[in-house]
Length: 246
Image (tube, rainbow, N blue to C red; front, side):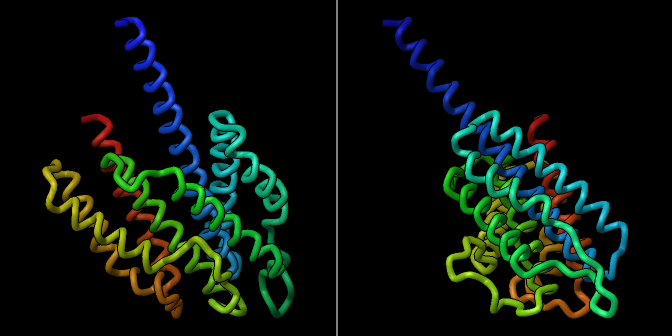
């Protein structure tokens, strides 16, 4: 009987370990895709600033790798993403048109947007609402990056919010509310002073950009949003690292 209990424990432990790893790889893919989208459209909005081209190329490569990692962990669950990404990835490039700047076909923009929505939906389906603190920090970073990606997408789109599908899984208002709730929850928890300081800084930076990424107020806000969303992700990641070493 003792041997049987040990065997059952090992099976359950293995299953949950695999689930945790798969979720992590999928979340990393969502982060990289959203970061690539922000940089991709920032490149267009800045009329071809090479810094943002370097950024989006780096994040697209990270998105490739994280999807490979996810495939290794769960090939069946990753199949839809793999097929869609392989079709979309080669199309993520600009055509420069004199007098019009850097152009991307509307169909490609819609596919890019739909893919991020698909990835976010899959993450939402597999991640439990009550996770450990490190996972919550990861999801908070993901939400900020996805909201920011949508901001840059809409800010650079000809038809703005009119082109968003009614079935889109990305709901910036709900995501922003969840982000703020988690921050407030952490204020009441017993965490290290370093983590609380970093989360406080992340909250202040979020205050700068929240209204813009929810209501798509893009006038002269591109640099403000891009800088602050990166800083928020760095601060959240730093807290994750501290928790991992605790």
